[in-house]
Length: 443
Image 1 (cartoon, rainbow, N blue to C red):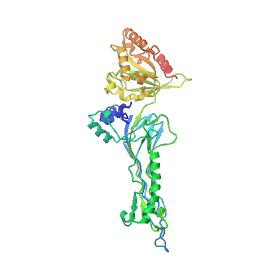
Image 2: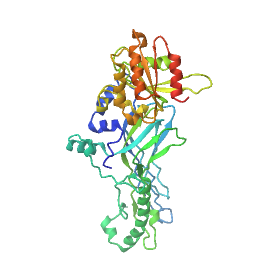
Image 3: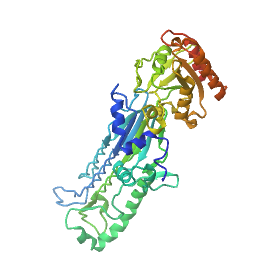
Image 4: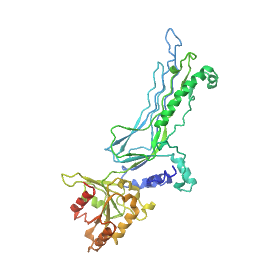
């Protein structure tokens, strides 16, 4: 677990380093309804306590024990749906309902209310330790996230083992009369408690089996037919009807319900698009997306016009499937060192099959701009992806030298990469560009 916080998740670093708030402020500038990152606290319900009760009727003022079991605590599920495209409706904390106590007449308590979180397709879910504990360690380490050491137990299957911190076998009794010390000194209770310990061990073993989470997290890349169980609630405690023996005729005790789980997770939405548009700020990505699709991203003549990802759907011919393109905020030099906003959104092109570098031909050096983009994204993110380069704002260039130099650089880097100049406002070369992008997306 030493490298748990050093993976590819750019945002998990920001959460623990305290920059998450500033990032969210920036995200709210353009539109408040798009959220692609959520720190989540999930608390399942506690089990209800068992009941101490005795059957009573006209002929028997005190009959046999009939106290029912407590209800199980509520579970927490995740349902992956198509009609949700953001995490903005996901709250930061959820508490499932507690199980109700058992009642007389051998009636079990009502189970706690479950919680079902509806999340978009493309969401990943990762377990994290209590953020307050992590921040304390960050403070002690001078902000070096690589020095965080958390005592996390792993299972044989390399899953994270979760713990409830509940009572041990033979504990968790509720005594209606007399105190615990009184009962534990009695032989009949000691004998009964040994039998109950076996039951408690079974419950704890069951908890340990189910209370696990994959160390690499869960990747919800397609809709789920049924809700996926994430955390289980606590089991209800036994009522006194279970404790009638030859030596115990009037058991005035029951068992507490088991505690629920309280765990923290990071939800990270990675939009699923066939192609990802990557460019410097004001390179013309949004204008290009408007020209090739029905998407309507914000367009302007200032940098950082795009403050959130936009997905455009491109239709070609009736016999071909459409393809989707993701426009993310501009990448700037030094983005890999947390400058700007573009790196925050690179998750949205991780699932894409191809990358489209968008370079402005009115730039002083388009080839250098492309090199900057490639350096900031890195070979790891580009590995295995089809790539093409689009030179925008071709109408603003008096001669073709800028485009020629760009083509020369592209061919020297990778001869398989295609390159095309376009003018989005005038629609010049747009149809040919769409055909090339369709081929890149393999549609």
